[in-house]
Image (cartoon, rainbow, N blue to C red; front, side, top):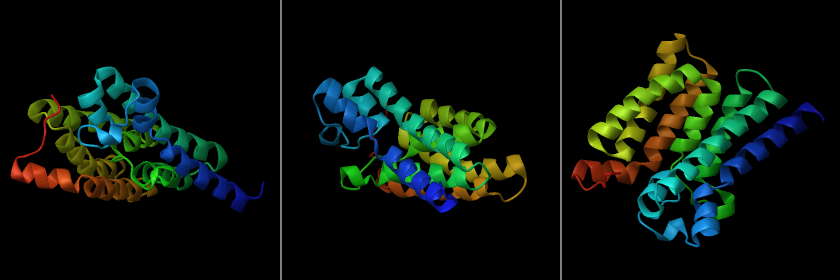
Length: 198
């Protein structure tokens, strides 16, 4: 397989991996419901926790993170290096947020971004858990915890490596994407109308 064909194959598979929305699939298969019609109508882990229970929430969380990790693993296998795994991870997150298989209406990308970060930068992922749990259990807003971690991701990445790398640019794009997908949550937080997770 020629290198351009390898790149194209990797791009397509990474994006399609992101298209697998576990919230939609498992809510239909296991609960005979459509997560997009329940609660906040977002097919993500947070909504699954709220309306389907802890088991469903953890299942959606696991598989949404797994597809991000799988996209990075595929790129590491086909095109190892600094750039291509980052790009594959971004495509998986974009596939989750804008899935062609579900009319470009997907989740918010946090769990998938977490899986990408875990595969590419395990120490940064572990450091991100600290502010995540502080914000989650301190204020009980999943959206606030997600926004905080997204905003800190490029900062922690830069401080960890002390240089601008493809990983930094990837984390910056992920941050902007997470802020975009949480724009309505930000408005509700400002108005003090956001729903708490617990």
